[in-house]
Length: 498
Ligand code: GLU
Image 1 (tube, rainbow, N blue to C red):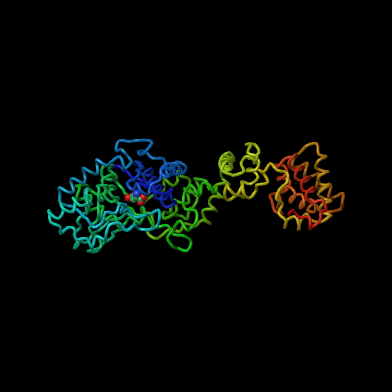
Image 2 (cartoon, rainbow, N blue to C red):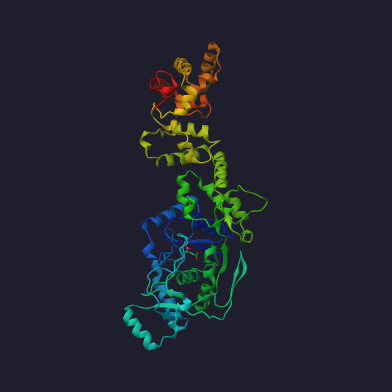
């Protein structure tokens, strides 16, 4: 049987890192088995949907490089791939369940909400009264028609579950999972008015799309016995199931929005590389063995195996992610780093005031690539490289410590002179000029370098000063020093910038 897997997000939120991990594992499994990866939009919950979520989910998947073989935008032989366009298929399946006596009308509640767990919101939604308290299966035909008339719409339908039966799920990750009698209760498949709910729509779609393996988050394990009952009632063979371990925060509690950045788009904006994020997500519950951590996507495809997916929760360790991102930045081609940085600069509020010409950004990135842990850090921690301004918001503490005395003011003025006299502005020329000046004055080079650093960067710490002024260029360096001297005329501690 050909391998066909699907990622089935609901457009009720941004693509969460947990969802991205599910998409990635499906994608890796499909690619490793030469199977088909399908994207299906589960959009039956109209009330909680917002139009921007759908496009954002598609963009986040594309950014991660998780291309789909069938689904929205690309089509395929098993479409449509959006649940809202598949209602006639649900009607047909519902008819079969009604005719087979598998369901009964339920009037316990007319709540409009979907029964699907609110995975994105971390809060299960308690829609319809608990199955255990529903006695609608006892209603006579006469009572049903009266109540239906009163309701003025098609009643909700509840699937009948044998209360005495033990339910078993064979899971490729968790092994045999047993649900004792009473644990799986009668459940709603369509709400009042006829709209399909998650368990029902997902089964109809998975069956008709000939899904071979359902790979998804552990929070859906409790839905699985219900879904298996639906498959059987509709005359389909259930697919294989693999439930991925829950994601935990550093305190080993379920990862939630309260833990800060959890959307894929957040990580993009924070300057993480998609390849680093993919590598990190792949290790959340799967391991290639041999303690390997940095793997190319091709290696992951070659090594991926559902048997190596663990049961216990996987910690979303942002320190590790950031380390990994730094490794990826280091190993990247400079052009890729520059592209990423330019993309982020465009999002800066003061972008019009920043130097964004490619050769300049390339010089900055070349200098910072080795030590940067994120692309955002290249911009935010080093704004002085990008600012077009001569006058900076010099750090008062750095000024006081390194450039606040009349002596350092005088040294900075002579450094300015020495640099201005240069014919060529190369790193070596600048360095030679400052060292020669220090020697002439019988001082240490550091006594010139420190105030120079504060004047051109605003801080007491920066990359090597000669590399820095080489990248800044002659006009910017001299302009900054002149502006600093003007802003601190007395060269006194008290003259630190307000
Ligand atoms: N729409 C469901 C979700 O986002 C899909 C669950 C499944 O894969 O069956 O959680």
